[in-house]
Length: 262
Image 1: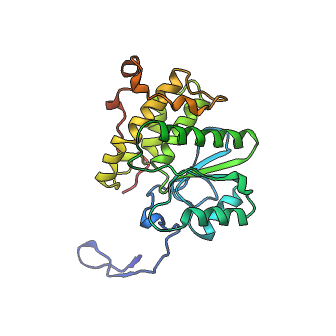
Image 2 (image 1 turned 135 degrees about the horizontal axis):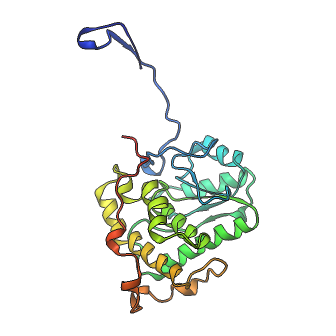
Image 3 (image 1 turned 45 degrees about the horizontal axis):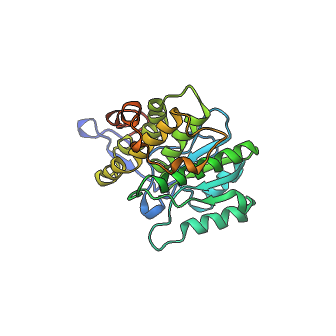
């Protein structure tokens, strides 16, 4: 809106407004991240580079021709859809088909159906995360710029980004990875618009999973170049040293991201 004239109480005498279309559709049942992209040329919300290579991007799910064209224009040659299909929709299959039609080989478009809630015992979500990490590592090693996402690009995406960086950056602490890739990108309370029931599910599922995966990395049981799903066979909580050696669960809580603009 633009204002003109001087009215009573220092208010304008008139406002002229024009309708604007949103640059990114919510998709995912109307869910969308409030965080803007920080990658030039990519308008998909909450899209950011992961690490310093310039070859790995994370974000929320692309929706529509514009978003998909942005990925191709940015040189993306591999995509990981790190989410399960919810409801009766076909958005996962549709996205994979459309990416293939834009020239990305089908072998480099993978869906790992990782759930955002009710993730179950440790082994399955751990194996899915290790498979996601292996996909990222293989494509980066082959020189393919890679994009990965869940629905909103905050929670599951944040988990994968943080653990990837722990593997790729030996001096990075689990606390700093949590702060930078999870809280700052909208994980849990990092996005104050996130419903309380979603944050509660994360507290019971993804946050304890991150704590366990970070411990496995710190212990050298999960490491770059050796992403063996066999590491998931035993829940770290069965190890007598886990409770004392893992990041305190109280430390794994997010305040509002500094990037949030109300």
